[in-house]
Length: 300
Image (cartoon, rainbow, N blue to C red):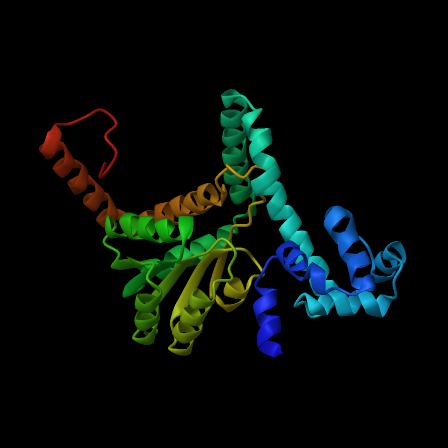
């Protein structure tokens, strides 16, 4: 039976209700009818309210929830709320998007991106930023970690920024490589970790291993998350996205990049003459490859 419940818990509630409808008892069918016809309303109902509307007892509602693989009524409502939100994003939203002009979409993205950068600036702890820059500046090696989406890309971008300043940096998004790296790290090393949610178990495991070995950890993530709670220094990035639009990329990456820009700029200041000479030499070498270009980015 536990195996069956675990299997059910991984399925969508709506699909599970449809699949089991023929096996429901009368009370369960009454509850199912309410849930299927008014899911958004059900997520706001108390146990007693749903029981009253369905014309059944409260224990019947609890048994119904458990029959679907939920631990109880609260778990049932949570899963139903999540499914309802996803349905709104990926089923209802496309029709709304088709009715929007391209100008509406681009303006919405521009505003969201600007908002993310501004929010990251307002949330940035300057003392923590200064401490993080000093920690990286004095490190033997900096390991840049991220997993999935923008966080993995930010880890690579961090290595790209740091090597120009002669900071020994190494980026990887491979979970096994991250685990092995953490296992051989030491007190003179620093781990720079990017995560939107601060919850990936593989990253948290790496941080736990690194901390046990005396390594310092800088986390660019959401304050109060499991990852943040384990880190030595936290640079808070907690951006609220408009999840109504399924086709809008997550804007947290703009905030992550802004914080990384601030961090690498401060490291460059700490490394003074050395970083200036490095950047000058890189710029000169790029010019030798294809000629000097006005306002030439370093390493473009």
